[in-house]
Structures are given as C-alpha cells and as structure tokens.
Amino acid sequence: MTSLTYRYVALTDTGLRRPANQDSGYASPRLLVIADGMGGAAAGDLASAEAMHIIRQLDQGFEGDAMDALRQSVTDANARLGQLIRNDPAVEGMGTTLEAMLWDGSKIAFAHLGDSRAYRLRDGVLEQISTDHTFVQSLVDEGKISRDEARVHPHRSLLLRALLGRDDNEADYNWLQPMLGDRYLLCSDGLSDMVGDNVIEMALSAETIDLAATELVRLALEAGGYDNVTVVIAEFVDKDAAVDENLASSDGQPQLVGAAAGPARPRTSRRSDPKTAESQTIDPEEIRYAPRPPSSRRWLRWTALGIAIAAILAIAGGVTYNWSQNQYFVASHEGKVTIYKGVQADIPGITLQHVDEITEVEVSTLPEFRAKQVRAGIEASSRAEAEQIVENLDQVAIKPTPTPTPKPKPKDTETSTSSAVWLR
Image (cartoon, rainbow, N blue to C red; front, top):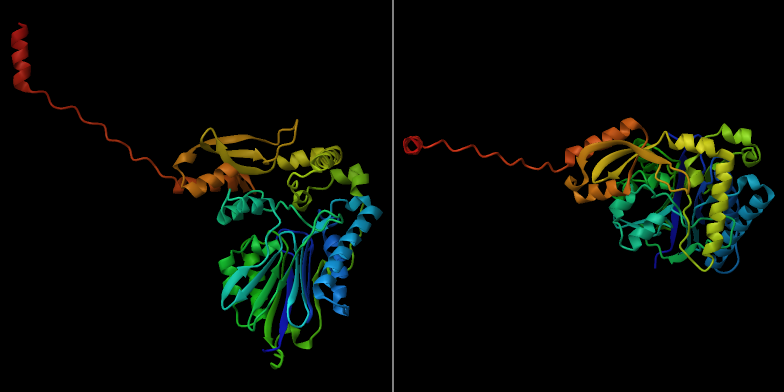
C-alpha cells in the first residue's frame, strides 16, 4: 500500500463588502482548519482567532488516538470562548464555525460544526462531506425544500449549531480515509454561498492546489464577495514524491491566514454604552443564529431569546428599526408579486415590514421554482434591485393567450326583407 502525505495551501480575502476579516485559516503537514467567526464586528474575529490558537496546538504533537486528541482540542477551544465571554460580557453572543482535519499518517480525524464546508474531489468528482448545521439544511433534510431552493432561501445563513462557549453545541466527528490524488477543500460560506458546487469542482481541478485556491477566491469575489472568503486545500500524494518547489507548502512551514494571523483588535463594551450603540449599524453577523429545535429545555431557550430581543431593543432599537426600513424584499401578497419595505422578521408588537408596491405579476403565472422563491421571499439590497427582481420575474411569467372576440355574422338580406314585409 502506498504511503501518503499531502501538499497544502491556505488563502483568504476580506471580500468586497466586509470591513474586516473574521475568518481564520490554517494548514500544515498535520493539520487543516477553517474557523468563520460571527457575532458582529466586536467579537467575530476574536472568536475565530482564539479557537484557531487552541486547535493549532495539535501541531505540537499529541498522544494516543487522533480523534480523541481532536475532540479534546475542540472542547478546549469551546471552553476558551466561554472564559472570554465570562470575562467580558460585551462579547456575549460571539461564536465561530469550525472545520478541522487532523492527519495521523494513515487517516484523517475530522470535526465539523456550523456552515463552513468540507469537500472531497476524488477522480474528478466533487462531494460535500460535511452537513450544514443550518435552519435551511433542516428543511432540506425534511424534504420541505430542494437543495436549489436552499441556495436562495432568505434564511440560508441562520445557524443551528456553532462553537459558542457553551456545552450544548456538539461537533460532528468522523474518520476519513484519503486516497492517492484526493483533494480536500475546507471553505467558509463566503465561497459556498457565492459559487455553485459545479464551479467549485472545476476550479478545484486546476493543475495545482495553489492555482485552485487562487481561482476559488477570485470566483467568490467576482460573484459579489459579500462575505469574507477563506479556503484551505490539501492534495494527497505519494510520500516519496519529489517536493514541488513552486508550491507554497514546499518549505513545510504552517500557513496561518485571516483574523488569527493578525494582532488582536481592541474590544469596546458597546452594550454598556448606549451612545456608542446608537452610532453603530447592525452587522448581519449579529443575527446569524436561529432558535434550535424544540427540546426538554425549550422554555429556557425561549426565555433566553426573549431576554436577547429585549436587550437589543433597549440598546439599539431605534438603529435597528431605521436599518430595517432601508431594506427591501419581494414576496407574495394576495396572489401578486409584491415589493415590501423592511425585513422578514416577526417581533411581537413591532411591524418591520409593509407593502411598498403590489405589481401586476401574478404568482400563479410564474414557473413553480420561481413561485416558491417568491412565496419564501427574495431579499434585495435596494429598491432598484427589488424592481429588477420584479422585472426578471415578469419576463419568465407565462402570459395567458387572449381569446379572440368572435365577429358578428352578416345579416341575411333575403330573410331581413321577408321579415319586413311580414311586419307590414
């Protein structure tokens, strides 16, 4: 049996819309890791960086089973986040996703938590080997929506599980058996949300993994670059194969990128300073979490959710409402495609959406896939984009063929004359 090793590369980009990079990536001859921080600009980078600093200690060596070592490392990272939150309540709510692969020389111990992804390219065929811990993925698993519908669902970024410094978000753990020529890709949702799997498959098949990493990041930016994008790639080769000096991993040194590679940014306790809160806009990463499925502790979660909503309203209610009223989405109203102003969220006692314009496009005239999109709601970044969405929908709508009005038959002259004579 051929002894294997792997070449590796890590690459990240802040993207075109975010002010800072909250992703962290790491690649070494033993360890591959992606962490996508969340919780807003005040703590997302801190969460991913601190988790990364704990996980990458595995590179210093471990005793016994690789899976046991990885489990313990994830537990330690989670405990570290919990400690930071207790020490500074201003970062309450921060968290991070996690993809980690630990190579023991013959197989891979794999940990997955959140919506960052792991893919394997084998014999030219791409396979997603992680399952997203998201609300939308739960709908796919239940057969309520398709994978294509999940890609455009307005709540596709809502997480059900992440590394949050608590004890109720267990990671998924699996063993992976690599084969000669396999390529493994770990990526943040800044790539998978922007680029389809078929495109990822083509890019990951590039001549070298360094070229593949560059192309994947380029494609994410070209598609809009709405989020930070980070990729870590490994290619399994014969252990005795010559080192390719042109590759970034030829020196055998670890590659650390993103938030964990930079200096820690100063934190501010914005929750304790209402004036500061009023001057800040709402970061989408602040509202990325979704309520978890009902359980025996459901009332505790609902209580926590209520307290969180109350805190947000008390500190930044005005800012949140003003921000929401500059948002638009397209949905259905009384059977017609309608432009709404606001956001699709239900908070008791507060209306965050209202009808802006009811168009003449009937939802029933749209192809089934588009009709489902409209019923679920399609987000728009501006009024102009909402109008463009409506225009696109109108173009694909099936227009009814008008029924021609029958022309009146010409009167029979002879009959008319006879009738006239009879009447006399």
